[in-house]
Image (cartoon, rainbow, N blue to C red; front, side, top):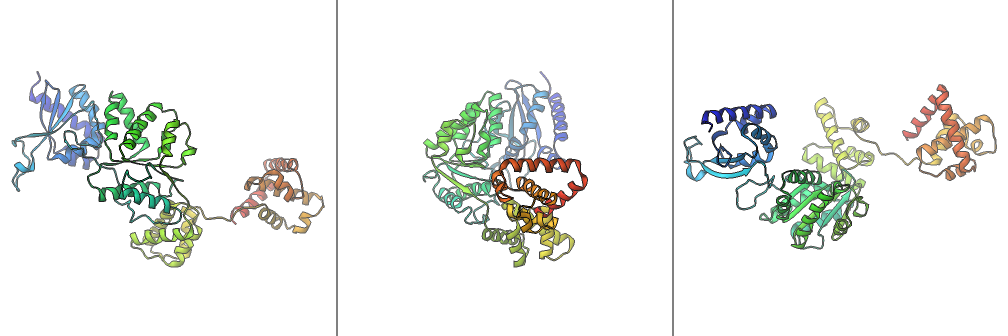
Length: 470
């Protein structure tokens, strides 16, 4: 049997290892106040005294994955953690936690079996951190034609979770359009309207990682039971479930089925519509289609203006109307790109002492975002080629077959193939009434010239720059 000094030495070594893995501030705040209370050899329980239950919650959530292997190494495999603290009811207003205070065990967890990564172990009522961002609410979400269906359905779900026809609510669209914002806003609204409901937001990648850990610890049932205890489950990036993950798909199927059968709300987000998901079991795909699939699309100019005004107001920065309109008309991107460009504009103005003008806006857009471009068409390329080579349109379209004219047509055919989605037959028909074989020959001839003739390659680069800068 080891004496208390030996266990204390081991605990000090444990703290030394922890200090190497966290920042100084984290160590001082969360680990330095912990005192070794003892070690129960019979139950193999490491007893730690902490200032309050908040320490238990934070350590279990943020540091247990780093703490567990250190404890196993120093105190032995399958070591349990038992926390003690002095409850407020036993303290006077001026008292602080002392080593002599009568300890009260509030939480016990087997460090080999973390059943619930979000719950303070030992508390009877299920209390979880919903993993929601308080800044992502319906109040901060800008509504437009591009997202009205998703927002309206989301609000209906928040008012009556699990009782509407929108279960599951499947929100899909390209990256940066606000899927996560809508999903989190629903969760925040539900917590405000129905504080007793258990709401949880989780990414599919985290769900998979947690399930893998549960399998390794031989506790998949505990994992599934935890998720089945939710009243509202929000899963972000459900498309990550696709692929060769039959066990994870089965686990999620069990969770989904249980929640849906008991009238609990499921909210899913994805960058693909349900019919576009690959390598997913048919029964899951069928269930994803049970409720409502709401698409988020690229914002129109009017919605972009609202987004910019909203962001500027939150940053307490006045933006001239002409700059707002310029941004809205020229940013060819998603909501995330719009907000990023605006932040860059404000930062440039603030740090460099410059006024927010159209000129500054142009500089920012060149660096931070892709400017909206006109569609590149066959006719546009023909015009650029003729202008650059100083050939009039009539001569270009004439039956003449001089070397200069023939090469100009080949250049135009090559560039049309590179910069448009037009089929070869359409390109040939628009340039001299040729067939697709002629276009292929022209593309090959121009490619060879680019590779062998530096002057010609430089000229082609100039023409392409003119085409891209339209």
